[in-house]
Image (tube, protein in one colour):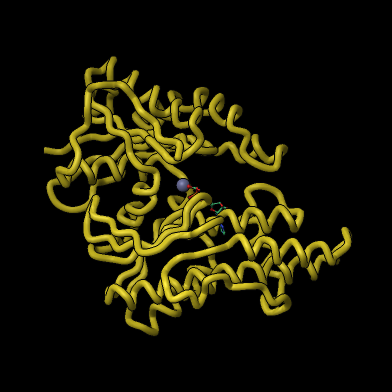
Amino acid sequence: MSTLVLGIESSCDETGVALVRTREHGVPELLAHALHTQVAMHADYGGVVPELASRDHIRRVIPLANHVLAQAGQALAAIDVIAYTRGPGLAGALLVGAGVACALGAALGKPVLGVHHLEGHLLSPFLSADPPEFPFVALLVSGGHTQLMRVDGVGRYQLLGETIDDAAGEAFDKSAKLLGLGYPGGPALARLAEFGDDTAYKLPRPLLHSGNLDFSFAGLKTAVLTQAKKFEGAPCEQMRADLAASTQAAIVEVLVKKSLAALKATGLKRLVVAGGVGANARLRAALNAACAQRGVRVHYPELHLCTDNGAMIALAAAMRVQAGIEAPNTDYAFDVKPR
Ligand code: KG4
Ligand code: ZN
């Protein structure tokens, strides 16, 4: 028997809703998904304004759910489980998804399931045309997290290393800001970097030779700031592009070397890359080249599912239910865990 799962993501600045159906065998099927991005709304402020984010999630979530149901040709009453992002994320934004999920659940008499946002990212490559198989090493690189994990199955995650300060996405975003680029900084910095020389500036690769699998990106941001200050307020376009390229190269080199070290330490021959930074073309190219040389297979989410979306939340819930790890509940005493 299959289970129809509605997933709601509202942890930050994207409202995502999706419908996923479990299958007797194999990965659940994505029936429909819809996303509303708040990027344009926050752009004027140079970053996400939590209060505005919550208000916009409230406006968008029900119309998106209706859209997804219509797209999949499903009635509201056909939903078996309603999943929402429990955290981490912005408290007010999370409460919108949790509140709507529990209200829907209570009205329909259907159970709900809170999902860890990072587990959503981690499992998102299972929706790609080339899904991974367990076990694998996962490189999770988002705006708030940078982690290496050993993954042996759904819910069987062993942390191998993580950032001791800034996340990789944060390093992209903060460096972008120093370069006068708008929000979101990662994609903007990557675009500018295409015109630059990535060897122009010598930037630090913190913890590259630390002997463990931890990361540190705070020093990089300081080095970028020091360089940017030397531009004296009026950098030429080429200098900015060179600094962007050098910054991206530093982040990419650390992520690639540490991923290879994790593969070596575990003896595994499969790497899964997930989270917003996983959309970075240079990172993908560098990982593909390094892994091909070592006979390691790399898996990514579809590009449009790299950043936050509802499909990964519905999927993670469906896989947890399918694996018998967690039963959805009818308490409707929704809890969110911002941190
Ligand atoms: O996973 P995500 O959408 O949200 C979090 O859970 O944090 O990741 C967002 C992060 C941001 O820091 C953004 O700048 C970064 O991913 N990002 C990128 C690219 N696309 C998104 N960083 C570098 N290159 C990209 N193409
Ligand atoms: Zn995310």
